[in-house]
Each structure stands twice: as structure tokens, then as C-alpha cells.
Image 1: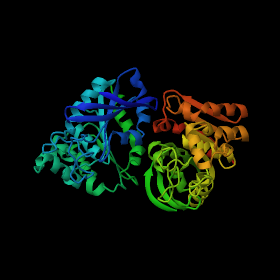
Image 2: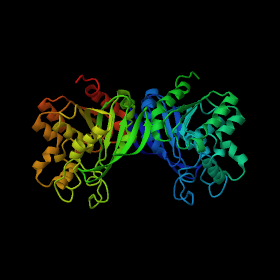
Image 3: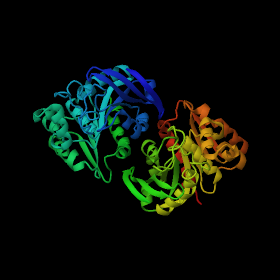
Image 4: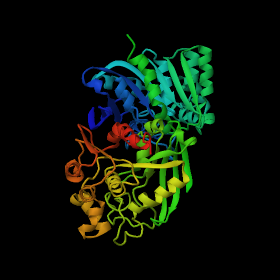
Length: 281
Length: 281
């Protein structure tokens, strides 16, 4: 992987890398924040999955996460939201919610998407392996994200509780097989067999697998997408039914924007630190 | 003034307004953060002047200032960096450092700029009067900014120590009559008589007026513009010669970006709070 640029931030280093992805069959960029503790020892990592239309730069520049990550000694690994490049097909109408910037963190099985849109494997396997071999990371990791990225984080953590010590999400798409964003994306990437969708649906996965790392979800009550697209009540029901350790926090007045993330990212980082920094094993 | 949008952030309200400016002869937008304390009483304000190419949205979304502003009970008033609109002339080459997005906080005297480019009066008079009559502000105010905006903040504070209780700047253009950015802007907006430039040059103003509100400047040592454009040593010499209360803080490794601002905005807000919140008069 090649370093594109590096900027000092909160005593640590905000870095953007480029690499050739075998999983996605294209060149990818991702961002990393290394806290000052990483200069002298290996540190744990929080992976952050962004939402529709984002790249790795939105969370890097708008969430203000580096401040507390620096304090706690946690690295941030921030991938892009889809494969990229001229060879990568996009939605024919240029829709914001399918194709480029909208990979939905699945392994596509349908044409013409399957060659490049393998974001699940990219995040869980290739990027993790690359980052943890090239950067001063100690192999303790958690995962978080926003909206489409919150969906991705929940799915990856529930399917891999051995890989992720904790999971959190802001305004996640909790039940994608039952909402317009998810129906459109899953139909396109996975086809019409809805059985295949359930492997990428946090609510359905939790009911089926009955496992999750400790889980925190924050959801603003003034979020325009709340009722139609996000459906946190469905995930809350699954948490109650399965008895996993999970909290869905509803906060008055906040919307779907990065101002909401910035307002509560400290709380999420401190939640993850309980499992990443203070744990003995 | 009309509210364009409002988002909850850090317990307060991030709002964007539009108004018709008599000073600039165009419609302007600006952003405001009202801390939660403003719901029940009038609060002091920090005016923030942004740098080249920015609008009111860069500082709003990237600096993370709302967190500590909310804690301290300080409103943020964030204007645009130039007049705007189809009628407003721009640099004929579309340069980033003159014309739209680059008003340099002066009152232009040259054609075709003079009709619209009156950013000094807009900030010091019109916007201040408008904001403080329409918003829950108590009339205690300070001013800060970045790069071109740091220059603007220093100039406005030194010329109006009765209006601003304190002033700070990140990576300001300290001696604009002696650097390429300032020479280009002042030639264009103010003409070839360099005497007219000195009213908008912080280093020259300080030597002449020998007054400033308490002053804090932060400057990163890895800033690409440091030697050629910013010249903080010139301002440091003027502070020493005049004995005003001022600190120029040089910090290792930081560049000219918003990551630098985000890393030190807390310190600047707490500096201003000494004069805005804790003062008895």
C-alpha cells in the first residue's frame, strides 16, 4: 500500500493510503488515524464504515473522532463505501443509493456487479489483513458505522463475533430486507431470492444466529429516514428476544447528519474502549 | 433574515441563515451555532472568519468547535468569505485567491470590486448588528479565523478593541502587504497606493495603533505557506515592540488544514471564554 498524504491531527497522524485490491479488482483508497500511542507500541483499531455517497474522507474530516481516539489510544481504519474506478459499473441512472458510493457491504452475486462489488469480503478479510500487517495494530478490533455503514458494521460483527470485540452504529439500516434502500440494493447485488438477503440483514441475522458482540446503537428522533428506512424497533425486538448485550439509544432532536455523529462519537469510542483498551485478554 | 436549515448538534442548534445585505449588495448566507444556554438567556459570541475558498460551511462541519462552545455557552457566528451571486464579479481567471471566496475582509475601492466587496464593513457593522438584534446574544463578542480569516480577525480586532474582547487566529496572514497573497488582493481591491493597504495589515496596524485585545495565534511548523505567505515572525516582533498582550504559539508538525484547527480549537475557545464568559463587566 502507498501513502497518498499524511497530516498531523490531535497529536497523531491522519493518513490516506492507496492499494490494489484483489477482492474488488480495482485500486482503493482508505484513511487511517494513528494515535500517538502507535509511535511506541501496537494499538487496537476501530473500523468505521461510512454511509451512502461517502468516501473515506467524510468521517475523517467531519466526525471529530480523532480527539478521543488519540486520548484512548485507538486507531481508526476508514474504508471507502464501494469499489472505485473507470472499470467499475455504476447505477445506470447515477442513483445515490446503488452502485458507486453504495456498495452496501455485501458480496454481489449478480452481473455486472459481482466482479467488483465484494465489499463484505474486502472489509472483513482483505483490508483487515492488509492494515494489520502493515500498520502498528495489535489485532484487537471493533467496528462501527453510519446508516448503510451501520448496517455493514452490525452484519459483520454478528457474523464474526470472534473478529470484533464490540460493535456500534449511528442511525443504521437495521432491517434492510424490509426497507426501500435495502430492497433496491439487495435485489440488484444479490438477486430476487430473498433467502440470500438474510445473511446481510442485522435483524434477521440476530434472530437466526442469536449472537453479537456487545452492541450500541444511537438513533436520532428527528432523522428523516427513521420510520421508512432504518427501523430500529425491529432490531430492538430482536435484541430483547435473543438476550444479547445491546443498547439502542434514542436521542431527541438529532437528525441523520454528521452533526449527530460528531455529537456522540465520544460516547461510542469510550464504549469500544471498554473492550479494546481495558480488556485483559 | 430567513432560516435555511437547522440541525441539532452537541445539545445546541446549528443554523444557516440567508439575508439581503445592504453593504455587499447581494444575498448572503451565514451559519450560527447557538449553545443550549441560549435557550434560556443571552450568550456571548465568537465570530469566525474563514480562509480562501471557504464558505460558512467549512468551519461549521470540520472544526468540531460546537462541542466546547456548547460546554462554555458561547455562540459561533460564521460568515461567508466574499459577496456571492451572479451579479458579483469574480477573478477573470477564476483564481482561488482573488474574487469569490477571497474577499480578504477589506472594503474595496477599485472597480469593478467596490460595489460588492465590502467585507470589512459587512462583518464589523452589518452582520454584527443583524445577528445581535435577531439572535439571543448579549453583546460580548470576540473574533477568530483561519489564514485569510485570521488576517481579517486580527485587523478587525486591532482597529476596534472596543468591539472585540479578545482575538485569535490559526495560521493567519500576518503581514499581507509583504506577501504574494496580500499583494495580489490589495492591488486588486485597494489599488496601487500602498498607504491604503496598511489599514488592513495586522503587523503594520499594531505598530501604528499600539493596541489590540488580548491575542492568541497558533501556527503549525509544517504549514506549506508559513515562510512565504504567513510571516508570523513579523507579527511577533510587533507584539514585542508594542508590549500588547499577545502569544504566538508555534506547534511542531501541524500543517495548514482543518485538522490543525480541530486539534486546537478547544484551546482557542477557552482563551476567548476568559474574556467572554468569566469577565465581570
